[in-house]
Image (cartoon, rainbow, N blue to C red; front, side, top):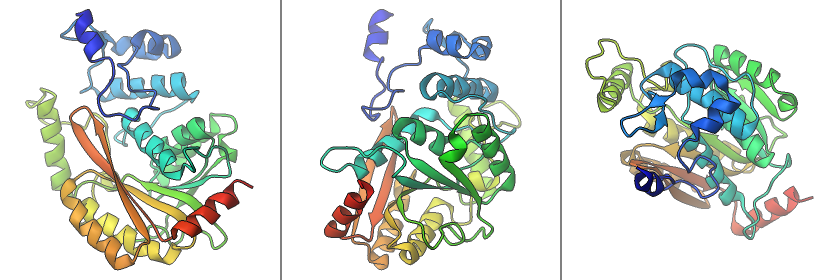
Length: 318
């Protein structure tokens, strides 16, 4: 048993700065968040674990991780809202920090401004990004209920209201318009776009996930990480959403250093690359990510030339 633990102690493919690379230490987690203890039991290997098919257990694990690693208190989400897998969300942020690095030095502190498109009720990227790097965030969403909950999380943690601002996107078809103010400049934008193209596709995805978790006989399965409506699907799925994002980013070319998004489906990449070419970006990158067997990637693009990027970074150091 010990040999198996040694081999699997570090999760393959995760960013080297990610504090969640090692297997969950349930002793430390339950000490930090006693509420988690009721969900912990030995798994098939005799190791402490939780039932990852249980939404309440997954949420309790998130609460413990946020409290232990990021000193976030009072984190909660309404029923059926997206409960994000924290290790993967942290990975995205650490790769973005590398993208901003100047001569290998990662910029830290509130001079770095980040826009989170679709921040959700969980507000996870601003919470982790600020705690890990001290960056300031604007979190945008089309769902007022989600923003009310995100604001409640900020209110529960001293100092977060000074570094995270939430904004309602009043036009569901827009991405940056109506959110970015005329005098604002962002070093980064990030987004975890809706994955599916329709409610039916989202339900089918839920069924597949529960089958993989050995729960295929459940009549009305709920996704263990939750999610509803615009969190899970939009017309055309992630491909259409990201292509629309690229098209609109042209209007804000001089107000952001790096636009970025997650891409879950490799099949979405050709259309996204065509959109980037049509937009006339100065440069783009595709950053591969992996968490065990799950593969995803970040697509990043900029309208700034190399010289303009240097001037931008220099201005942020003042």
